[in-house]
Image (cartoon, rainbow, N blue to C red; front, side, top):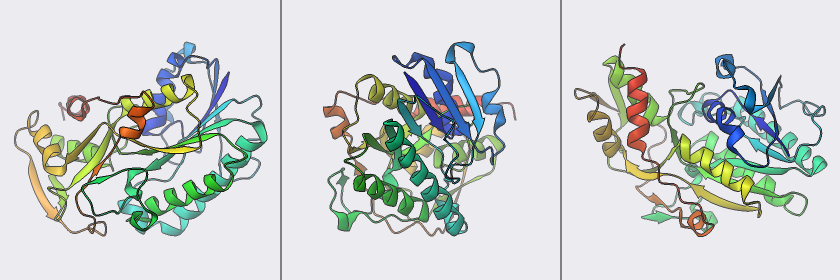
Amino acid sequence: MNLLITGCCGHIGSYLIEHVHKIKKIKKTFIVDNLRSNQINSLFNSKKKNNLYFSIKDLTQKSCLDEFKNVDYVIHLASMTNAANSFANKKLMYYNNIESMKNIIKFCMKNRAKLIHISSTSVYGKQAEIVDENCEKKYLKPQSPYADIKLMEEKMLKKVSKKIRYSTFRFGTIAGVSKGMRFHTAVNQFCLNAALGKHISVYKTALHQYRPYLSLKDAYKTFKYAIENDLFENDIYNVLSENCTVNQILKKIKRYKKNIKIKFVNSQIMNQLSYHVSKKKLNLKGLFLENKIELDIKNTLKLLENI
């Protein structure tokens, strides 16, 4: 069977294409990216056994995927991200992400391809201790344009649920090393600043708030499990490794980088209260994600230890 991966050069995509040969059933993998982030290095030294076929594609163009035939699965990772900066790029982000999603849905329906759609746990705004996928609509309060778009994408899929098979995975904040890793997410940015001896900026209200974090290894494990176990039930699942406070993340960094400096700052994304995101629903499907974020922190700091 054949797989199409969009956004293959990004943080998650670059890890996935290095390990895609381990997914049973997949014989050939088409990978696409628009390369606007200039991360062509994500494709360096690709293993022959991965059987990758790369194309530069702009997913906002309606006919961009017409050349791909006999595709059985699509993992849609292409997206403008960075929630904190999405306020400044709001108009462009809405256009890019929504138009791309429209074209992916059309492609999957036309080719009867099963879709893995990536959403975000940042769609939650419920002010309670634990949130799950059954959270009432009134408590789905995305705190950034990026998160709002993810909720819009989920609704787009629900509207065509009779014409497509898919799984939506609400990912926690990504941590871990890959060729295409970026440093705008919390853990990676904290590690970079710690390595450079710079202040780690922490939102004033966030120090003791719990948030979900997801190891790259667990993200890949989720993709593999979904394809191998045919987990395409047109449903939504939280995907995370651990719930941690920012303070707990900082303590994990201190174990490997003793003298870190903290600076408290204001942010537009500050009005959520602390909560845990439940992964019980995914556990009931037989998938258990338990990789330690501390290991991702250790490996990230190791990459940067000589600077």
